[in-house]
Image 1 (cartoon, rainbow, N blue to C red):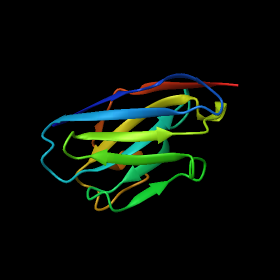
Image 2: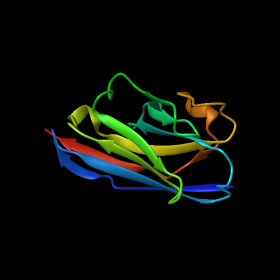
Image 3: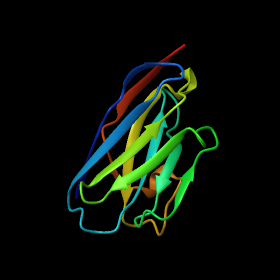
Image 4: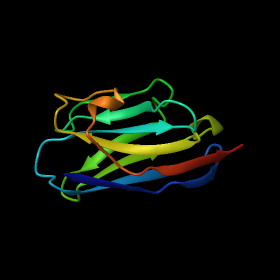
Length: 125
C-alpha cells in the first residue's frame, strides 16, 4: 500500500502562484507513475498532468500547459505541482495519484490505484 498526502493548497489571487506537494509513504520502493488531477463539486475528476516513473516523460492538459510544472524528488518521495499565472478557472480540489500498473503515464483517473485526500485551491478574481 502507498499513502499519499497533499499539501500546499490555499487561496490566491488571479495571476498568483502556488506549489502543491504530495508526500508518499508506505511501499514506495516500486516504479510509480504519478499524476495530478482536479475536481470540482459535482463534476468528474479532470486530468491535469502526469509524470512517468523515471521522470523522463510528462504530459499536461492543454488548459495548464505553459503554466503548471510537475516534478518529483525520489529521495524525498515527494511529487510537486508548481502552478503559475493562476486563474479562477483553476479553482478545484487537487488530488495526486500514483500507479505501478501504468506503463509510462496515464491521463485516465481509473488507471491509478492510489490517491491522496485532496487539497483545495481557490483563485480569486
